[in-house]
Image (cartoon, rainbow over all chains, first blue to last red; front, side, top):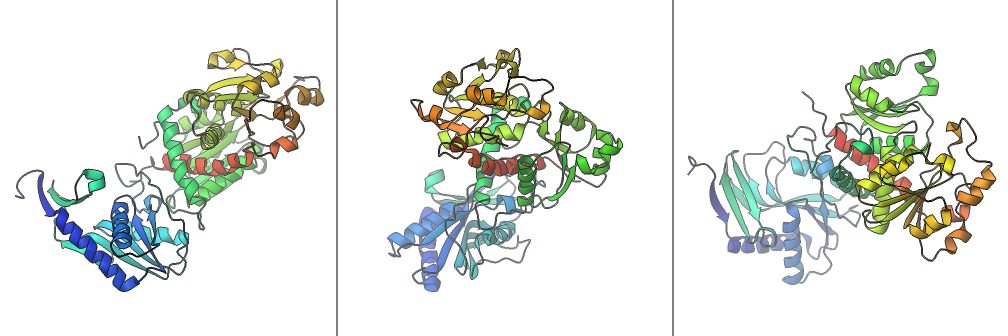
Amino acid sequence: MFGLSMSQKKLLSSKEIHLILHRLACQLIENHENFENTVLVGIQPRGSRLAQRLVKILTEDYKIKSIKHGLLDITFFRDDFRRRTNPLEANTTTIDFIVEEKNVVFIDDVLFSGRSIRAALTAIQSFGRPKAIELLVLIDRRFSRDLPIQPDYLGRQVDVINEETVTVHWKENEGEDAVYITNN
Amino acid sequence: MSQLSVPHLLGIKHLLPSDIDLIFETADHFKEVINRPIKKVPSLRDITIANLFFENSTRTKLSFELAEKRLSADVINFSASQSSVKKGETLIDTANNILSMKVDLIVMRHPNVGACDFLSKHVDAKIVNAGDGTHEHPTQALLDSYSIREKLGEVGGKKIVIVGDILHSRVALSNIYALKLQGAEVKVCGPKTLIPKYIEHLGVSVEPNLRKALEWCDVANMLRVQNERMDINYFPSTREYAQLFGINKELLNSLNKEIVIMHPGPINRGVEITSDVADADQSIILEQVENGVAIRMAVIYLLAQQIKRN
């Protein structure tokens, strides 16, 4: 399969994603109980959909009321400004609360080099000093980290080579829930 | 479109409508940033910016400096009154001396028309025009349009009248370019002596009567009479000017609709605008100042994005 150009493999199906999201929601409840002092922060752009899904599961299926959640854009905090061929495009940040003394959970779809999370750690400081920060990711690309950053909550760990890309599809955006590995 | 079509911001004349959209979208993000508890982002931490002001300025200089600092750039300031320009140094020499200190971007205000165009052809740095004589003041026009867009939803299709000293105003020229580019209708109003000949060629019409102009428009941009640029008397007296072309509460209340009042500052209270109008709810003068920082952050960020290091 690796010899072919542009081959695609489905890593997770819609059913598997459904199960994983419920497991992650339960793990969050285990550690944060009623979410009184916890805020969920989706990392823009790809983490926002995952964050919204988790909030939906937590409020509808587990009856947890008033979960604070926001979206954080890290564009202006990235370390590759002017080092890329394509210019960076910013997204909106919606954090209408202060994170001072709060437990913050960062939510992103794929953890790769760790640089986005590094940028998010700096960016979140603009909204106060959190008590603690945790990281939740749907996919962890093992062995591809540039920085000492590891997830606290993990959907699925995968071993893929650098030429391969992992893309998460959401029903709301791409028409189905699925995770694909593409060999370029 | 995620990149500007121009290498420098010398004037609105060189921009495309898509450039203005991109600047406004980027400014939206920065406006959110400057309303955070900590108003600073690290994007430009390896960029050095020189502010060269060969002409007096308070608001524009502060606004640029604040925008640069909010982006974490290193900033050096220079005003002509304290410099070697007084000793006879040429503009290129001054700029090149500053550039050998490894400056990436220059923000310049200069009393001569075209000074920024000239500099951009001779030095290796990004240039932002902060006002060149009576020619252009692009960031002011951008923040004016941005403020109209914020207040009225969009600029296209709106009716804007620019009142006052059109002849000496770089704000007027840049505004006319910017508003026309976005599809607005523009009229100018002022004493005949202060309206340039052939201004109709820019696609604007002249309305000599202030009341008629105000009744027509959605937005009135009131300009200051630039006494410092006047070599002769263009109108009999300031009092007469205020009576014919000054806006007061009585005039505003007698209109059959509510219009938006703008002013690029500095205000001569009691001349082009009375205090009660300048401080009224429909005046967005202070919003213009706030938006100025976001717009300048956007312009500098987008230009800095084009700087490549090897």
